Length: 131
Image 1: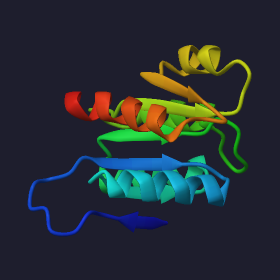
Image 2 (image 1 turned 45 degrees about the vertical axis):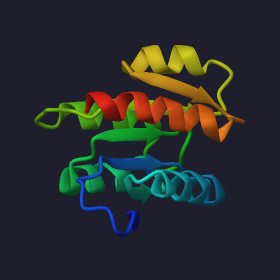
Image 3 (image 1 turned 60 degrees about the horizontal axis):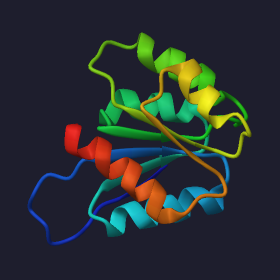
């Protein structure tokens, strides 16, 4: 688990949970969100993310769908079975049917891989304003 937060800003920052089994993508998203001022926690699979979500109460979840141990579908079901409220989920996946995957789990948004970092930041920011 990796946690980063912006330094020198006293305002509470929305906590984003980034869940992706690709270490490079996870680090890229984590760093970019931290630079934007989010408090970021990362997990390498759905099982780790579920444990983190129980402890840190994220405001937004950025979720890959295809991961070992516990995939995005399993994570979404288990996460939504926890007592609420529940954070919005933004899917970030390479699946050709990302829009369908998002609908299947009731995600609040999706960004397909490969992605423009600006598109992901915009998706997270739109949900952060509501969180």
